[in-house]
Amino acid sequence: MHRATKIVATIGPASSTPDILLKMIRAGLDVVRLNFSHGTADDHRQRAEMVRDCARQAGREVAIMADLQGPKIRVGKFENGKTALEPGHPFILDAECELGNDERVGLDYKDLPRDLKPGDVLLLNDGLIVLDVSRVIGSEIHTVVRVGGDLSNNKGINRQGGGLTAPALTAKDMEDIRTAMSLGADFVAVSFPKNATDMEMARQLANIAGAPYGIKPKMIAKIERAEAIPALQEILDSSDGVMVARGDLAVEVGNAAVPALQKRMIRMARDSNKLVITATQMMESMIHAPVPTRAEVSDVANAVLDGTDAVMLSAESAAGKYPVQTIEAMAAICLEAEKSEQSELDKDFLDRTFTRIDQSIAMGALFTAYHLGAKAIVALTESGSTALWMSRHWTHVPIFALTPRPGSERAMSLYRNVTPLHLDTSSDRDTALQQAIEVVVSKGYASRGDMVVLSVGEPMGQPGGTNTLKIVRVGDVL
Image (tube, rainbow, N blue to C red; front, side, top):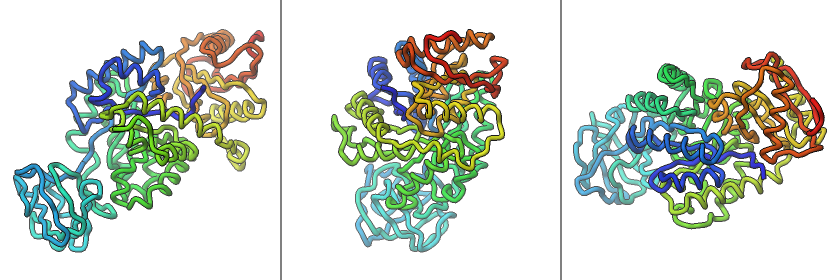
């Protein structure tokens, strides 16, 4: 069956063999995430080459997303590897401490004391440990433990409510962008952006680094900071998409606030013609179990019903025992949720105006296919813009985007309800349309007598040139 919602999965120790990765692709993997928080440049390069090889074996393009580490603010190391924090006891975070003990620990982010004042609340280890700041003296942050527990090496630190000044792009991120472009990444996910400027800087760096390779990656903003929420629209405007990164975001704004923010972000992204990925702990139990919990099934299904373009796996596929089964289970949940999803196409089009010809053709194709009961929409596209606009509105009519450009094909692998396919388009429109229908029929997506809606641009081969809408029955002469 045609699945509209895409699956992003992180590869790591559990999924870095060609055999497992090929099975994951065949199970429904659309985009591979390379987590630059772990591994070397050579590790990522080898994995990227393996992705391309396995995708060729599977007979389709699979995109690569380079996920930057960003300014992950962490405690340093302990002389014994960890310490136990007791509620009510004092504890010091010291930027000048080399090796921690039961009384204090060092900081990777040396400027943290400048960002804090008495009364601030610090959340460590994804919020499992809570410290109240009592005073700041030079390099030392004096705290009182509110919620204790074991604190081990390199655990993350968040300030409740946000407000830390660490820049979104570190020196490591800048080097990782160059690595990502050299290995042909299709997407770059930027961690902890606070505003549009962070995303614009990342895009500029990626475009410069990608120029020798002919690459302009799509930029994904990971919404993880509290201060990113009021700046969401400007971040969307400066990005190609956003990731609802529920881990760090939940620590900063509180777990209870995240579900409503998730729905808001998905709605805003679709209204802005941007991509949206829902991430973090979606199938967490499948790190160790062969089946998901009922709550996880509902979580994935609700993200689909909200209209997310993609759902993402992290440790489940990178380090879990069941990476292939996790993708199979996620794909099945997506398919089932999509069956019940209601189309509001007519409502979506009320009071809308389209100033571009190509966007008007895209919307006309959607409307026509929906009301005529067409079997498929086939968009011949160079850049993929036509397919993106179509994918922002839900119908039960699958969209097939045919392009001669492998880069466009991989970029469209994240577009909801869009199946990208390769087509060496002819300069003759009718020949190209006939080839497009033959490709869709050969893949088993349509058969003789089915109605298909086609969109194409004349003259052929010009990005942004879609200007023609055609309705045909398979088997008729074009």
